[in-house]
Length: 306
Image 1 (cartoon, rainbow, N blue to C red):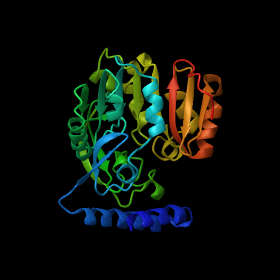
Image 2: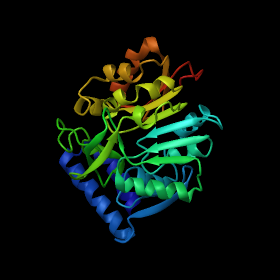
Image 3: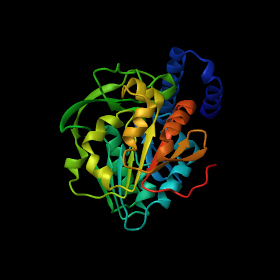
Image 4: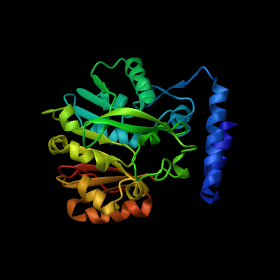
């Protein structure tokens, strides 16, 4: 029944008012959790990404892993091609480990940063479930200073949790289409500059997905990015406008500073490579398609645009 309702919702969602979408997603999340059981805060999904405990109320990544047994398979496959057995990997916004677990199985060392305390507990368990001994986990937010900060924890889409910024209303910038069904709870978490947390550490691959606050973390990780060969970051125009308060073009230039090419992995599955001279065209494509993952590279990937 839940599968049928989910598919029906995906068809009609574009024509529904935002307030109605919020209520539907919230109800779907609550029903799913109730059917699973109130003493089961998480369910186990076993598939391509590994064995992962995911929040029972999560109807975004959690639902996708439980229903389809994989998440971001093309993305994981490409990132695996960029690392070797001795590679050092940093994942900022590791969530429950959908990227971290499969990458840790081929990399030499993986560091995972996750600010959400609830999600972090699941991440710790998932590392143990997959018998990973080359993973280091840190429970803090990446930022431009060290201290404490307010953090918003969403239920229906736990991956949409993020820093609470004074200029952003608690649900502005997420939008109903991002599966945030109600105002998230707020907690205090530690925040650190990554260059201070990992001085002189060199990471071959850096992955960052922190819900529109990537530019806020950028000043605190300049040294780390200067040493990285590959940098993947999610760029969503809505988040850039509402949360980062900048244009997509400016975000691409700042995030891609020092890198010579980029691959855009849009949500509809198409992959396009851009040289640094064409970063403005990359930004235009991001705006046109609504956003997706961008992989910045020191050199060309030799990939053929699909």
